Image (cartoon, rainbow, N blue to C red; front, side, top):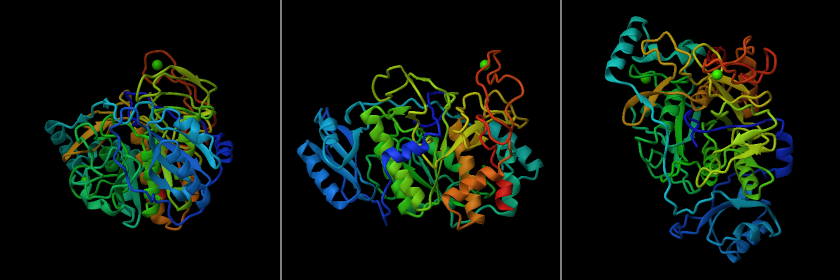
Length: 510
Ligand SMILES: [Ca+2]
Ligand SMILES: [Ca+2]
């Protein structure tokens, strides 16, 4: 699910990382984890579910497990042998329990609760499309301010992190690519076309990468605008039209993972995306979503545990190949370091059941996985956005994601983030979805100035160079209705609202 604000979304804790890594086992080093099995077409069966089956990553085990999959009534759709992840379709209601009992299977479970053939619904909140009249007003102000981009006067978010000044020193290197794992990217947008990397883009829906030209574009540009907005925030060109991204000199790729029927980001799609990014030399991935259908994946549930395991193997594989993964903290205003949270939206592919979860045992994926940079959102006043999830030891850094209650002194006076939309349009969105790409952009600048930095070193630099931001001195009332909404814990250098602080693009290029 995209991390937009009008819906439920979350993230969770961080101290879990050690136990998580330990309990899931580690992955083998490998040249490539690309799948070796071709996709099959058999989604018509009204009872067919998709599964991930996670095994020891040796050839003997994988061969035996593949046989067992067939015997249990499953069809292998993709085999990521190097990380021991099989994507399987099966109509056998006992498939999960059967395959979990097979020697060498470390975890296995369904990645959805509704059959593949179920008719989904897409309910993304609408973007605020920029009107011509509003654009004209902004262009006048940008011109008066001597800004290179016509809509830059409204980009308060760039100025908040010094990205406007950074661009005059170093806009980032063409040798650095940020892949947007999302709803697809409209690379025909004139503000994205100059920086788009088609050779590092794909459609991963179904769990197998399709690199057919244009496969990475949104299925439905009107509804699936999210990825295009994110891409522009990172790397819209400084070309005298529209907006600029945080790192207008780097390349941006699109890896589509949202299902065409319901818009959901199923686990096997995300597994495919991390492996594809890693195998295609992507330096940074942006992840402004949580993996569906569970907002929180609890380790005591066999299906949810298998989802955590599979996606974690894929993202760790990417890290080992030198890819830094950046992710949004979620828009539920949840304290991800609390003892109990209410999840009323899962599973979101069928009928949600309200449950109470401990975010130290139940994880928002991928943001809570080990080594992933977790990003909270701020508004123009520099305060945590009213919707942003938070948590001491969970949030690593903060960045502008917009906040309709924090109004900027810009021509549009719109507290959200302005960026590209499909079909050569522009528009405003707010969310931790918008904060994460600012961090991905700064990370891309860091990678440009420190080409040999590892993912861990990039993360350390992001934190070291961040503008330390103290907890609010007054009780936090994000929406201003007189009711306190959240409590910030920690000191100036590290706290639950802002982690190590708001990222800084200017320091990244100095
Ligand atoms: Ca531009
Ligand atoms: Ca309030």
